[in-house]
Image (cartoon, rainbow, N blue to C red; front, side):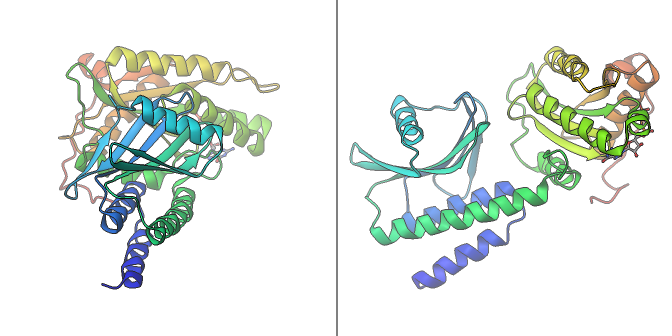
Length: 331
Ligand SMILES: Nc1nc2c(ncn2[C@@H]2O[C@H](COP(=O)(O)OP(=O)(O)OP(=O)(O)O)[C@@H](O)[C@H]2O)c(=O)[nH]1
């Protein structure tokens, strides 16, 4: 294939992706085909410069996703610090007859993301030029994709993205529990008496409340918890690798943080939550129904509280809801 056809092929591949992870995979794969690197990865650091994820591609087509125990060597850290100090877009380092190039993919107060490519040979000028072009296309396309996945009012991920994400959790390793003592959790979080807020203060003021609550959700949950606006005043959180008591503590902290939102002339805002454990062998519609039953319990018992589905099962208050994969069409 000629170079121009090859590039067109990569661009075609990028722009056919409708999923952020597949877009990242497509970028890593394109780079591998163009540069034949030893290793290529995308490293994400949170606002405190702690690594939160690493997606890497070495041999074969298997992408490795890491959310814990991510190794950032001192020399890598020094290179990233140098990039940030001098506001560079990229940096090339030679070491032990290898070349490592660092490229900034995203920089914000909440997170920094870098593409890191390790090569045996220094890339030629034309190869560097092609990679630069690829990264521009990637950046443009990923911001378009992010827009389509985001709820306009709150900036959280939207319901469509929730549906895509939860289906993916069944297929991929991204939500695989690495520790026997911890689990993954789904929480439905719903504002209490929100209709009364709308009725008394107006719909625009209600929107303002939704924006404040979304901010508190983002501040309270951990960097790699996934947050969605599910519908009007309903949010969903997907949490990875927590014991039940830690999950409970996180949600109880959320109750406190939401109550401390100050809005003129409004009584303290409260939320109710229902939580269930994510289990790969249980259909997601069943899981959502479990979380919903737990939420209903929170609402019926005075609101401003968190209920776990397994607790209402133990108390004999849950309905049997086991929907099988054959009963409902997958979106
Ligand atoms: N301002 C605003 N209101 C919305 C939006 N989406 C849904 N709502 C309103 O949210 C309210 C939800 O009311 P209900 O389902 O009765 O729930 P609630 O009043 O919170 O009562 P409980 O959930 O039982 O505590 C309705 O008044 C909707 O019109 C939105 O985007 N903005």
